[in-house]
Image (cartoon, rainbow, N blue to C red; front, top):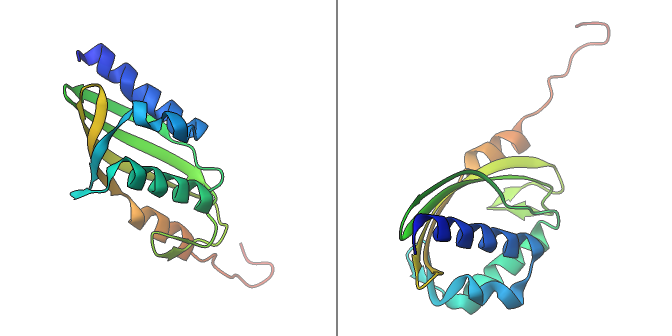
Length: 140
């Protein structure tokens, strides 16, 4: 695939995720996809994504930065969402958080075969652990 086709394929994949069109996921992701060094296959990848949307009902993948060097795509994804309960081991419990993910993909035959993801968990921790400063009444 050339750069233009690969960018279009990646944007189609992001559209598929945001639509939660799990039946179409196999058009974008290979059967033996690996995620962060572990082969989880298409079924495992689909299950992971479904779990993400169950934990974060308002989840939306927004492309902030996209770099393409076939057969690789690198993206910085931005999230602004309200997860239920725990998120990446952090007690978010319905608080709105914003964070980013830096993710690198390898494509083969027009489909994603490798995903390497780094999520900015420190940004989430900082938001949920930040406590408002209590001030005495009448003080600025």
